[in-house]
Image 1 (cartoon, one colour):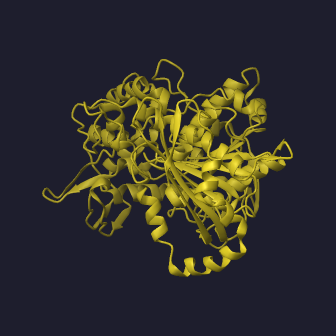
Image 2 (image 1 turned 90 degrees about the vertical axis):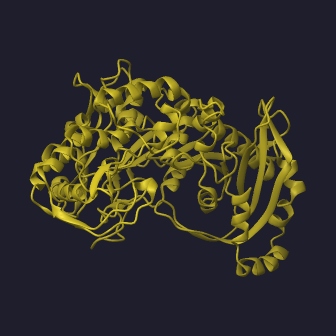
Image 3 (image 1 turned 135 degrees about the vertical axis):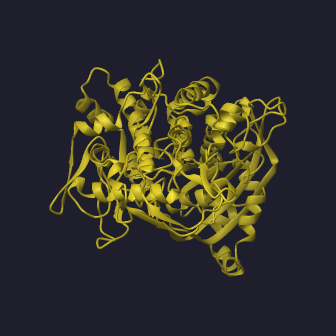
Length: 580
């Protein structure tokens, strides 16, 4: 529980001292936030089959006058008080241990809500930062370490057994099981802690999920596998499929035998943004129609344009330091960019996996600098690909004899090895829909880490699966009654994009989900705030996919354009079975 202790140690004396006087007045929290009370509120033995709670591991303490830090996607809050609770559990017949961590709001701040939170990268938890979000909305919030050995551990510490092969118990926990168990336990703890039964009547406690990237994938896994678990889910930029696209850039560079300085590709991307800025009818430094950008811009237009970058001190996991560099964009670099934008195809000209558009950064094509030779070399940032396919956790990924067809083989190998437990691509959400669940799915259109096209492909697969007898527009109309996707113009991976700072960003996503679930306010346009430029602070809503933004004067329209469907929902036809 080292992370929990670190958090407590970080509470300053200024926070603790006034809490002593508040404790005398706020008898509600001080009464319920005790080890005895929480122990009695834990789910009864056998409540979740195969799960044994370890009561001896329980830690409880009250926290007063806590300030929730604001984030890009959630407002901050002050004067929050809560009961900080941790405990662990094991699975019957094993000696494993999974740690759970909950923030339970003071009874006077509780608003009949429970929130499961997701992680990032290959960690299942964001710790205190993720938990604090629930306090803003009066929700109990929970997180899990997945059984990885602590809240500071991730999948890499347990994914391989001692014999070097995949640990499928850990893979299943990471894929879906740990979030499910935490959610079931957390909902029951919430009900009992606040006295869920009043005069014999069960009080409704709304349940939610919130996560982005790996957290978004975790949320989709729950929506797909446990249709009655949540009333609403905020799903951001989910990493729902294979990560082989991270190898596309290095293989393209090796195939074309040119390894551009990162600065050279950054100039090409900046040129694409400038050229495509006005395609949505508004010139603001933000590309609102990246689909049109692919048709409009060719990297050869950048040839001869100057680039100039200062030295960058990168960690070894980022490829190491980069020297200062200047030059002009070469024909070779333009060819690399165009090949990446085209998408990843096999030798039979069939699409293998998703791709990014010209106005999106190219982190998967960044090279490293070899100071001994003074040259740039490929940097396959593929630790997760190694771990889950090659059963080796290292960023060293030799490219000898690796072709586009080899990458296709990796996709198939990943589907066979870890497709069911990890890939959150199941499109039949009938049980979730019929239970009244709502999904608010959002993705930055300039996300260079998890391409936005992966979200549009999945969302469209749900439409086709759930409404097979309806046409495209009619199917989306039905789907939007309970599942909406929003592409955030110019935004990056789970946050604003510093290269397109004038774009709108949804500042209160979870509130939109809550309003939809509890007050039936269907967000036809997602509220968002412009974060830079002359319009900073103004409200600029985001269109619901498949509608696309079109500005006429100062007015925003959300319009249908078949071009967007064609570019954002391509067929992944290299794999001989349906791939979502």
